[in-house]
Image 1 (spheres, helix red, strand yellow):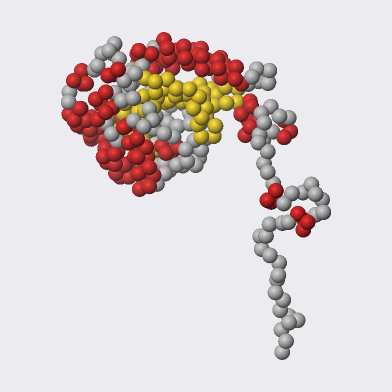
Image 2 (spheres, one colour; image 1 turned 180 degrees about the vertical axis):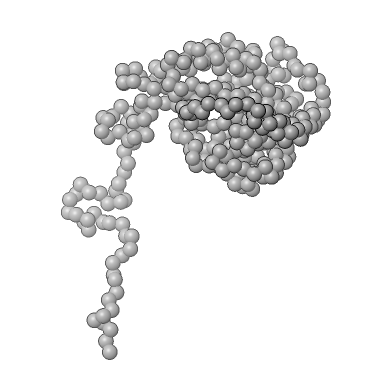
Length: 328
């Protein structure tokens, strides 16, 4: 019996790249190996401008962070902590940015029409920041570490509590007063914490946060920070691409300009807080004890808040019109 009539081998190749003469005789159609993507040129005709570039031509986003200087003990240890928690506990939204304190959390500037170059608008914004920072330069002290804490609101999270000088709030208000009319959005943030772990999309369990807190206490270098104040800087970033819904993938930020913050040891004009005269090892223990005390009383304070709320009339429900933020 012959099977040749009923059985045929499919000799067609699977997923083979087309060759130019196999597609068409038209020489205008390139094969895969010849295709080249032209570099994007700003201010091209609107009908061929890619959507992301088109958006950036009309609106740009910025953020102002207070963060440790690169290659310092606190910065290197915070980076190690992020890498360690990503490996052992999986990604969370604190991994979307480098550890920082937000001074201006989100600034949106829109350009209506193309008559004013973007360079002029950005240069004006930088000039305002330069002037406001210079006014208060000797009041801009390094932040002070005040312990780790697990929070339940607005979402369960692990934070490093910090205290910053009032000059930072005055700085943010000064920038806001001068730039409010020129910005679509200008958001400030509570300047009292560095977020180490949170996830508004899927809450992290308290047990996992406790393990991450133990890891933070072992990994994050506090000695130099408590002894000298550490080495810090203010950094203006342009937000090129946000990864708000992709947990663990860092936002693409482009550094525009930075301003160094003098450490306590390099500025004789600064008065050190009374706690700075304690031995560093003792100050670290006091910070950890204060963290433990806050956590030990948190269940009672939460219960008290719930009881107080039940005695009040329910608040009016209002629509939330705030924009999404880059990070908590």
